[in-house]
Amino acid sequence: MVKEQDQIVLLDKQIEHGDVIHVQQLVGKCSGLTVREVHPHCVAPPFTYDPSALDLFPVGHLEYANGDVKGSVYYPANDDGEGQLFNNRLASLGRVPIVFMAHGNHSTHYNPEDRLEEWCDVEPPPAGWLPIPSYQGYDYFQQHLAQMGIVAVSVDCNALNCSAGGALNIEQRADLVISSIMHFQSLDADSSSIFFQHIDFHSFGLMGHSRGGEAVVLVPEVINLPGINIKAVISLAPTDNGASTGQPKGYAFMTILPAGDGDVRRNYGAKFYDKALPELIKSQLYVHFANHNFFNRQWPLDDGVGPPVMSRHDHERILSVYGCSIFRASLLGHSNQAMFLSGHLLPVNVASGNTHLSFQHKNSFTVDNHEDNNGIGLNSLNLPTTQSGALHAKEYAFKEGAGSSAFNSSFYGNSIGMVIEDKKINGVFRSQLPKQTSIAKKEIWIRAAEVYDTVSVPAGHTGFQLGIEDGRGTVVWIDSDDVGGLPRPYDRGDSFTKTMLKTLRFPGRCFTCINPAPDIDNPAAILIRTNRGDERALALDDLQIQGSII
Image 1 (tube, rainbow, N blue to C red):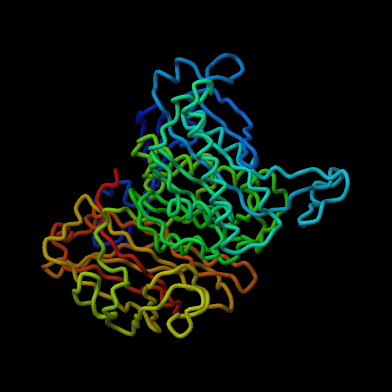
Image 2 (tube, rainbow, N blue to C red):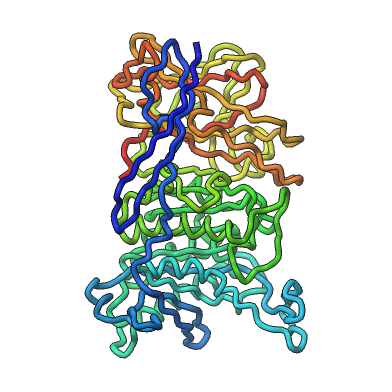
């Protein structure tokens, strides 16, 4: 029989630096012969607090300029009524982390009589038109970082806008960022500067948007300055002109991909995510109802494609909340913040329901990532896989322009994954595990998506079941809907509608709610079953077992 059991669990827990968790969590259905006690984390992550609301300092602000090197800086300041100076309060904390930001290509001037009329040309704008300070468009994010104790610098890259694109333009933007880093190193060494001996360049982060999002992936590869330790990079709606290797590594990495992006329509950041080798964690946010421009306050035009997009405020909340999470985890040592990046916790006051997360931890145990060139019959552990029923599984390139190695043209990124098709129902794909591979106090992670068929987005969602088979032959199934469900293809109404995967988490404890419970200390295999009967193809990748992430 199947019983649905709903339960509300309330929890108040004090977290470091004054954050308080207020948890309200719905526990959904557990299928089996009998229903036993279900731990609340088996189904949905709890809503907790706002990671960007850590308000420890008043915020100071300065515009800086040294020839062509210029921009704005927000910093944790003295509580002197105006928030303009460091004082002993900050000095007693020692050096503080720093983040540099780079905007992308945009018009350089606007008509003061019509803010939506902009000028982007190498020729001078009409008389009376005003400059667009694109670098000031992330002031909201800079202020959040400053109030929690991080110096936040936004680099003015306007001189490189409305000019030729390509890899050279990205290299020039990276050079501007590095020049600003050198400028702040000089201020840190200048006894007359308010930044004198206050900046910790070993706790260093980058954030870039559009062409700037590609530039901040390049900077770690080309920077050659002493004392710099880049710990985290955010690449927001980045371009990909081939300026970098395309493989972020050595730092925590996040990419934010607006599903309704009308500018960088191919969501190139998915390629960076697929190839990233993270320190700590890598995380991809595929954001439904988001466009390219609304993350920057100086870019007023709605370039969104498909359904109407979220408000500008909602865009800003996505960057602020998840951006503060990765920088708090990497630069401030607040390790619990990684739980927002892996979907274990949900932040309040943000449209998290529109945000589909993919994530990997550096210590994950990989069962199959399909990158090993050993065929569909073996997993990444070189152990056998089998297919039963009418199910058909095959490995494909998950990237644009893959030709005959692609399942269809709806995949973006740069990976190899598996597509499952089943013309009937209850076909099973089995992936064998090594002996003594316990999943007790662990989770099974798998990236999955409903494949867009390149013709239309069908009504209603689909899904699958993930199962555990133990050495005694006991098999227990958990439905994908009970751990968050598959993302729907985002219907842009154009040829850039995509299949975009997200990571689902199946905690080991979930499998013990059914009688007879399997031996989760000694599972023999992980199973995937197609139980919907709708004949929709499923994309799957990165089957992993993960313990604690903090």
